[in-house]
Length: 239
Image (tube, rainbow, N blue to C red; front, side):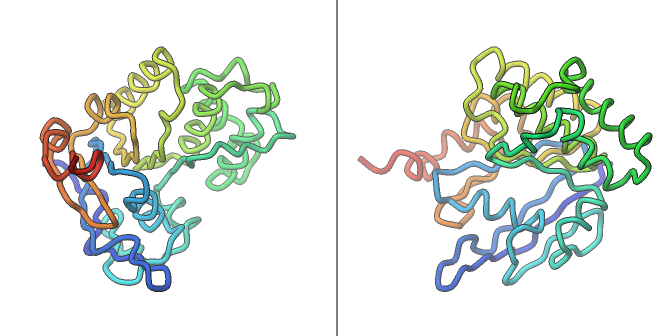
């Protein structure tokens, strides 16, 4: 029986009078991929941020590895096993690729020798081992995305949270990313991904939740939700 590693129960996020996420629940088992999709402004990234500790939860709760982390700060959630990427790549431009990953590796490895070993292992895993001593500004978009992944993997996460990691990638880079993420789940990694590229969702996600205006409007397999009339209406309108 697969172990449930993450649960959100009736999570509500509100900014002033705006309800950005309205009592959304979800569940993720070990080794599975959960896709969060929806039109722009649907609340995907806000829910993502609430689960990882970057947005306050007004009501409901978040359970991670059977522990209530609803009001736990992000750095503690990271130590417990959450690793995430961000929509916009913002590496430390004056640091090398290796040094960027070292910043993350030090969180769980205070000794430099250990941190360097973990950071290099993460870079080699994502195919950036030969770029370790280049400045991060020398990387193209696809490699910057891999640097984001390496930084998250250096935290030894139990659940990897990916915020539009595929955006802007050309077809070959997209295929490489999909194949790489599939290899992670084969090793038992659990993934939550906010994504607009449906090819990636269809190929990777075991379960998909669709948000619109902060509400969950559909869920199921990728093929089920993309043919749901409510989902089509949310994306394309009624005309």
